[in-house]
Length: 325
Image (cartoon, rainbow, N blue to C red; front, side, top):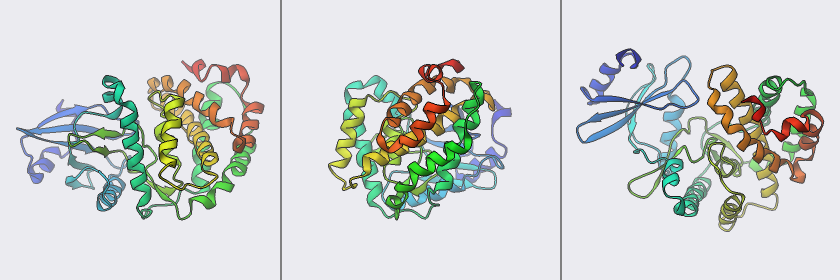
């Protein structure tokens, strides 16, 4: 166990007033970050180990501070050492929304409504001082599908045509994300914590940008890691739109961003398998592919849908990514 602890941890905990605490490793995520629960008697905290040069805790700290200043439930920071990549944060407990709903399925609708209400509150705040979710970023993310998925299934695709199709699909949307809202980018049931006070806590928000209000809704309601029924998805969209004047093009933009995000995720999950040896992510691809196919049916996605028809053989699409497993 000692070999796996972050360098300089004892000194860091001593300075933070947590010297001599028990250190328990926790499951990580798809990055180089690691997490530990720190226990000292009745009190506990979470340690994030974001080792440089692969990781930088600065964005997490900066975005978290902005969220807290604007009344959103990010974890409090007990201590930080940016140079070593160590951050001691408030312990939100062990009730992730995804796991909790496995044990409390009757609370699904109410829990999702609360998550939608948190997004409405976030969108009512001024956009944060974060980079724009611009076309270059959308294109770079969408390009992960031809870059990683296509060679993994043994096909050659028209990369230039793919990029041109996304330009045609996304360009009409860009004016509707100006001035935009803060987009957490990974807002889903594994990154929402259900707190003891009945509120929902936010984690994994370090990649926040300023973009379209539909993006985090797509992230939540077309969850790569948890089944969200089409009925629940529609009910939550209705709940959001009953409270927000989102404009006549909102559902088209929701489909645009759903397709873009799901194409990106397919590429990321294949990359995690091929590059990082994390084959378990392949098991999520059929769910993501199903959502992608639904999004592609929207008329706003016609150029991208035509590219898929011309470049991804139907027998491959029918397996929903299953041919990789």
